[in-house]
Length: 139
Image 1 (cartoon, rainbow, N blue to C red):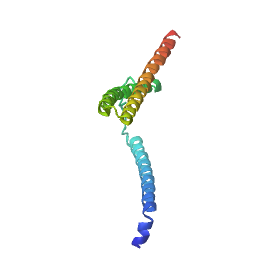
Image 2: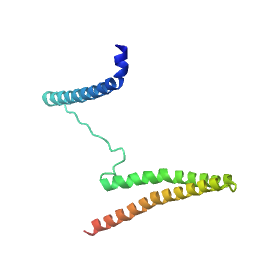
Image 3: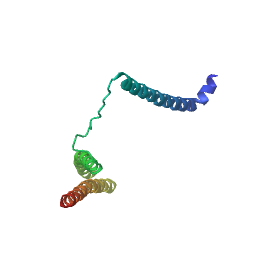
């Protein structure tokens, strides 16, 4: 019996996951139906409001994309600075060794390419957003 369980361990785990997911969905469906029935029959009102975690200014897809790019830039700039300094240390630690110098050059090149992509995407999104806002205000 234990050998059968060991052989079919992955299948058992997958089946448990599937059935527990289905159980949670069905259970939550019935809970929501019973809550609505109670609310409508007894005069109880249920009001739920989901607050926007990004704030009230993010209420459309372009604003969400702009906010996401701002977050990427805020996180990316320190990472870029760290890797520029790290590449500089790699140049110093190479001490003329051609293999280490090649690795340092590649590291600096990839860091600068990543910086150009991140900052370029941010600038392009700001330009497009500004253009769209000018077109909206002109109409």
